[in-house]
Amino acid sequence: MTSSSDPQRPPSPSSGAARMEKIVSLCKRRGFIFQSSEIYGGLNGAWDYGPLGVELKRNLKDYWWRTMVHERDDVVGMDGSILMNRAVWKASGHEETFTDPMVDCRTCKARLRADQIPQKNGVPQCPNCGGKDLTEPRSFNLMFKTYVGATEDESSITYLRPETAQSIFVQFKNVLDVSRKKLPFGIAQIGKAFRNEINPRNFTFRSREFEQMELEYFCRPEQGMELLEYWKEERLKFYENIGIAREKLHVLTVPDAERAFYSKGTYDIEYEFPFGRQELEGVAYRTDYDLSQHQNASGKPLEYFDEEAKQKFIPHVIEPSAGVDRTVLALICEAYDEDTAPDDKGKQESRIVLRFSPRIAPIKCAIFPLLKNKEPLVAKARAVVNLLRPHMNVFYDETGAIGRRYRRQDEIGTPFGITIDFETLGERGDEFRDTVTLRERDSMKQERVKIADLVQLLIARIS
Ligand code: GAP
Image (tube, rainbow, N blue to C red; front, side):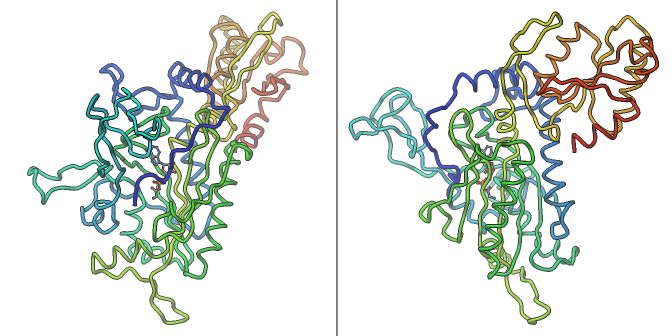
């Protein structure tokens, strides 16, 4: 086992360093993602999600949970601990083999991944200083080691989990017993994972602390290959349903030599990031490897009893394993756009717009009274906020010209804007009393809608 399930591929020719720079800057400026511990100089490979980032991330996780657990009869959820008995990591193979091959540069002391060292005239060279005095590759375990309890000795060692999957395997029997599911069925989990990556990079793409959304889908051995195809297709649909264009998604069939020895087939679902095509999710057929390892090491039976055949066997498993942070980054990259829009005087000006799918947008609807110093407009706008708030995340804004207020919401991807004007108050006749202007972010089209119809209409457009 190595950590390199996302092998380094060269960036695609259209790689956009400039585009990526703009995205990173927008993320900070508008409160999606900040560097962790920024005021102390940061911590490499760790990130904090700000007020908008946390909403985006939550919407993504909620949608995953909804489609993978709530909308299915054959999947249940669990939430395992991050710290587990060290024996888990011995049995899973992580303690022995969850490693990257490392090389040290004796000149500048840089530590480098052996598979990322460039060569000049056939001679490996340090990409930092150009030095040629490099050590032989050595294995570096990516798990963060820690001690449980007051004594720091061999007996108290454990690790921060490098994947959520193992707690699903070790709780397989308990979950099977309480849920009374029949094969095929799955156990889903969303949670933090930690890897001491040698080169965290590409913003949040490769971090040392990140979140995973994993499903372990248990089945009979003869169902494995078919279910691998099924889950690949389901997962592709998921990405399309959150607004990632199918043309930007690619399925890599992981070659035999790169696959874990126990896997009968693995697909990587990749996305065209501005820095190149990279893995979002792995869909792996892991056979009965994990349950067998834990059964052998713990001495506890992890078998399934087939009532009809009156036989016991260890189920096989298909694992769609996605990264929350990578998907958030893909959503932002996919949504980022620049175009032009008219200002308050009708003059075209450039705008930055995040074209998030309404389903995952952090704020669903912004509400604006046309003027902030007209009490009846403000009161009506506040009433609309109260009407919508129980159903969706809304934002009230009364400051600045209306065009500027639209622009601020476009930049954070709010799909709908509602303006309360004098027509709403009935000052231009009864025809438009209690109606508002509903503006759509991408087309910038405006329609007149009754306040009484707003909840139903917006819910249909954001679910
Ligand atoms: N249980 C299988 C497993 O963990 P993996 O391919 O190593 O497989 C699954 O990880 C997903 O977790 C990846 O496709 C990626 O989205 C995410 N992931 C892995 N390492 C990551 C890192 N250092 N930073 C951010 N996301 C990561």
